[in-house]
Image (cartoon, rainbow, N blue to C red; front, top):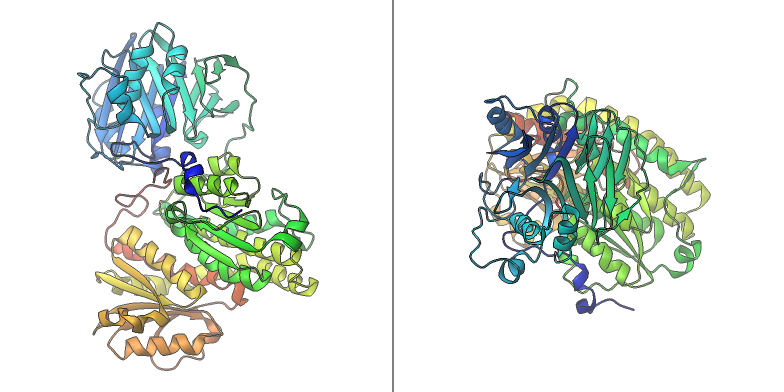
Length: 631
């Protein structure tokens, strides 16, 4: 069955509409002491999810008050510091705006017309305009341009004195993916929550109960933890949590592992989280590989696909991802095809979901997402399952939507990544792809025991080589950044896997330094792009592919002859083959299959130091957020 008729499955795919809400962070607490400091601390930890505006709603003397601010959490904190607040019940929100400008009117929490409900929201209400027209009074004045406010007014419409019933009735007419936290004026000692498709956890701390988008936002010891999903509703007080199904009927929830994350939200002496995370790559890769390699072979503990599928059925592999994860797929394509003999395609998730996906029961579909929340990737996963493909997802977050909906998962061990521009998660994803390629090659019968042993032996050396690379290229990266920071455009070039790394390098530079950086396949330069090269044009060339070394070198000579200033990123063996006075950064030698894990490191550092010299906000670049949960 080739899945090419999208009408059958389009109803599975979330859409975004004008006025839709965004990928945000929410937190709430009912405690025994003042909760405002913990809400602010939690929002700071959730700021990676968005930092266009922030706000809190809290109960004082049975009255709900609201404070909102445009900009980062620090702006909200300044406003709150202007008055003495003592509240034991509160909810908070940090926003990344996709539609609707980042104004105080659009900042959360939003409220219903008579002030009965104050709510915070992460996700999308797809049919908000339809609800406005058909279910709410035509003369209702809206304070904001968001879809979130629609839910507040729905709650008021259905409220008959019992909030859980109102939430159940309001949820029943919603379409989309969402998580809510809300306070009701009639129940000043309670916070209610609801979720469907967006993350929401309930956590019992040492001093009360929380709801949050991410349990890592909670800075006190976790005693109990629960996930809210599938239209479920929660109700928390300072001493108890109750759960309800989508109809409002009480249910029992299974506790989850309540061990607090060991990942730090602190910079630990580093100037920025990005620099800290760059330095953590040896550990991230080692931990990922250690979890996938055992007794001299690749073992994927969360992959349960019959051997017959790989040896007899598998005909095609499709990798689907966005952004940097997509670039890991571009690298992996060449390795997979070499080690397995199976054709492999790499697709951008937002394109794939609307194309004609020729996938069926003989296809292995691989989905890559650091957060496990990427909306387009999740939609494509559902599409592939509908078409009968075997599914493997590579994610960094257990309990994420993609992890839950995948039949098979490879968990990377990058740990929490705070900086918006990914580094250690990217390297961990590459490591996971290396292990998966060896695994499929073995199951497919394409790799001998000797070949498998050779690859695994070299993989065991990779974390140390990453550490060595970071140490040896750091000063050169700083030096070259002093030149690059003055440019307003930079070109990257490479072939095959080098091109994939060039794509990642250009993305890193534009993400955090705002330089117009573009990547090109070296052989394509003569087909138009070389017309942009003139005296002084900056060009970063990735030169790692041995079999086409002379071809790429020829492309470098072509742009040099037209005046380009070229920085070559290569390995030690190839540096010795280069002549002239070229500017070169070299990395240690390794097997060609794993070389891109080293070649990408100088590009990360160059981007970091360039952004630093340009005075950019490195960890929280403008217009970006860590988790992309809308299209």
